Length: 84
Image 1 (cartoon, rainbow, N blue to C red):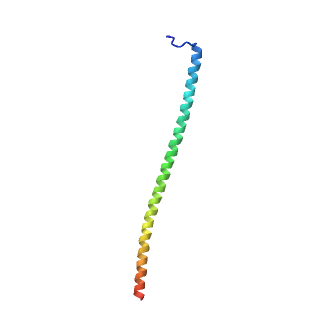
Image 2 (cartoon, rainbow, N blue to C red):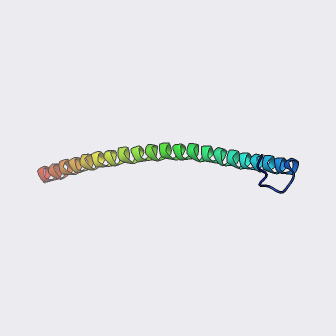
């Protein structure tokens, strides 16, 4: 083996193993955080879509009620004109 390190192999082995273990731990932590964020993001999208649809439904109902109100007002005005 070409010895490019001056430290004994036993120490190097411990160092490299600990370095690998720390990297795996960090990687695992980041992966779980990533998963949590993905789930949270999906939940937020679903919730946003639900509220968006609710808003559209309510806007349609509002328009329908405005038309109905205007019809009732016209009938009321017509009935007042006839009764005079």
